[in-house]
Length: 160
Image (tube, rainbow, N blue to C red; front, top):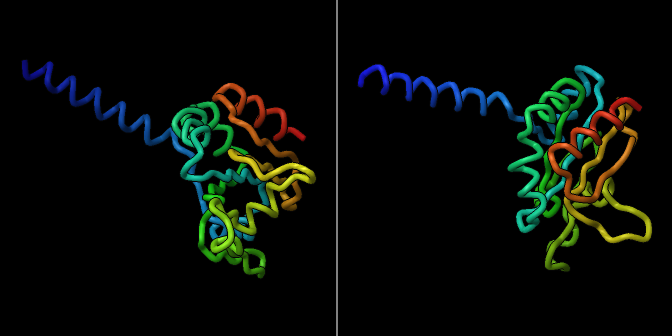
């Protein structure tokens, strides 16, 4: 019986440790700026909102997939930002804020609008933006991506 209980605890410990390792190291824009000064690298920016069902589903599934986590950790800095945040963000010497807080039900932050807007189309979530080492847009995705489709997206676009 003691061996069985010890086995259960060991199994739980290994499971929890494996889950912790399979996480993306999300950073803020301020942390990104510091990292980019240390080493140039491609960047993945993920915009979400608390009310976005597809964003929550991607957080639970696609961004927990071990192949996706591995790809992101190896090739990208990863920034995750609530598109409706009221935070003031300083990036590259510029002040960004949410100028729609008093005007709209779902106010969109200036940084989200800058990086994830498309001409003639409304702002949509989830939004994933891939930037090259010079912080130029490689590509954007404005739809729910499964683990498999996110992995394919990262592989195809990272090789550009």
